[in-house]
Image (tube, rainbow, N blue to C red; front, top):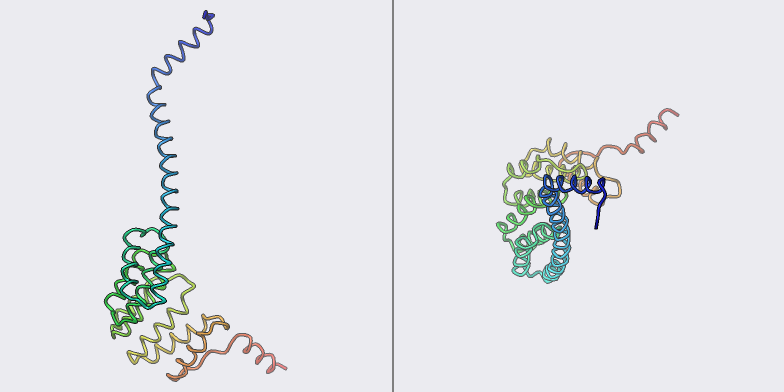
Length: 226
């Protein structure tokens, strides 16, 4: 096929361009396609992991219901080895800590809770810290429990943290500090929280009194003004 002069110049320019940049373009395309394939593979892998972890967690739930501590620990170990990156792994660690604690195996309970602290999201870490502080309280490791409770927590856990601090301080016979902690816990809890009444009982048992609710206080002030 014959080409006119302009077409021949365009072809020559393209050949020169390709000779200079062709390899670079090919590598960029290969990398882009490789990244896209890797992205798809990773998403598929994550979906498969999540499905498999969910099925294994169902087994763990059945073992929890049967109070089969040995089976719970085995499943939790498998979960942590194979599906560490899924949400089910810290959930299984919390469940395994519960059955271990009920079996009076505090060493295993603490190890499971520590795993959840080290590998879970903020919410699971917070729950694990609170429960581990409770185990340390039972072991009379008061300083360790308070150190854990003085760590960072999501804002939504402030009431539970203050409540647990109050428990530890009572065990240390630091009643003035315990009253402050329980008062803070009571103030941070919504009225509908069933735990609020328990905090009130604990506070009053050590000579404290709950602060007046804002609505009640406002009503009293309105009556006095009238």
